[in-house]
Amino acid sequence: MLSQKVSGTSVGIWLLVPELLRLGAWDIIKGWAGKEDMDLDPRIAMQVVNESALCINRVRRKNFLGHQGFELANGMGRLVFDEQVHLLLDKHTTGQAQAMLLNLGLQRQLSGHYQGDIIAIDPHRIISTSKRVMSKKRKNPNAPSQKMLQTFFSVSAQTGQPIMATMSSTGMPTTKATSILINETGRIVRSPSLLVADKEHFTRELSSVGEKHENYDLLVPAIKTSRMLSAIKTLTYKRLWAGFAIAETTFSFDKEEKQYRLIAERLGEVEKDYTFNAFITTSKRDAKKLICEDYDKRWSVEEFFKFENEMGIKRASTLNLNIRYGKLALAMIAQGATYQLRRKMPAPYKNWDAKHLSTDILAWSDGDVKVKDDTIIVTFYGKPNHINEEDYMNLPEILKREKIDPKIPWLYDFKLDFRFK
Image 1 (spheres, one colour):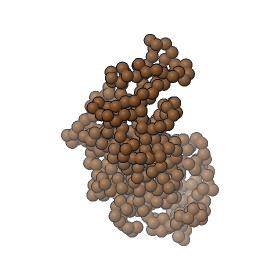
Image 2 (spheres, helix red, strand yellow):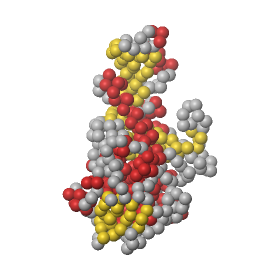
Image 3 (tube, one colour):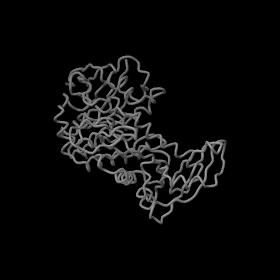
Image 4 (cartoon, rainbow, N blue to C red):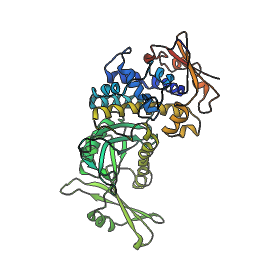
């Protein structure tokens, strides 16, 4: 097919190819698939990665996308069927998918995707349309119980980028699933960090995280039980500014001798209007900084869910964890590549969410694909405002200067270059 010029509206997806090279995505995928450069399985997985980048569940049906520029970017002359994707994902275990996420996280750490010393952790529950009989959970206290798939993420609070993800059925307790998440996160980010969480993590098991992970401390809001409220209302508070005061004491869970540092905050100027909140922590950081600065950064994980939700972390038609875990890991490869692409973009494009980026750039950029000697040349029609042409023209030389082999293994060792007309 490359012997002829291919024209289409999906040439924008080719912008991800150099980012996938920089991310080492092909080696990560091959390691998961257990295959070599010339095999089909890694290319099927690459199609799933690019589908995730386009924020669509599949491109195999003609009413979604059938332009050959997309097919070629996966290293194939056609799109694979649903059954082929299903069989590929189903023959790999959740452990293999977790290893793929670990390898991706290590590579992203080396690429500077994680900055700062605060990590936000949070569950992300996805409504499922599965027909199987299963436990149900509430997504929030006021909602009815529903079938769900549980995912758990750790996110660098400064950059908003996912470090690690785990997955389970609704039968898995949050505490156990989060313990697994923290263990895996600790294999990627080994520097001293503060884990900020929500009230779901106010348990004695998670509060002992500092004993198991010497580099990690935990900051979590306390559930306002009658016992907790009675304790924090009688504390002597230090007023920091109008309507805000803090106090400190110690706290122990029922029938446990171990004591934790408890920081309480009092809101309101008049006694009858006082409201109280409390946090427990294993950190020795300044109380004011912990409550007023560090904990606010927990919302970075919510921003991640909102920003990248369309990439495949909001839908779950099946509860086969082998399939779901594999798709999650491949979607995270796509997310890492689009993050690198965004960093090259000027404002406001770099602040677009995943759906906006895919719709306006990756899926519907007009152009053509052709081959000249050993190089695939992708030409964009019209001068794009969203990218700097100098980042893509003479791409093989750019990659060589970065000490990256410009030969693209899933494209049969062709190089890639761009033109803009």
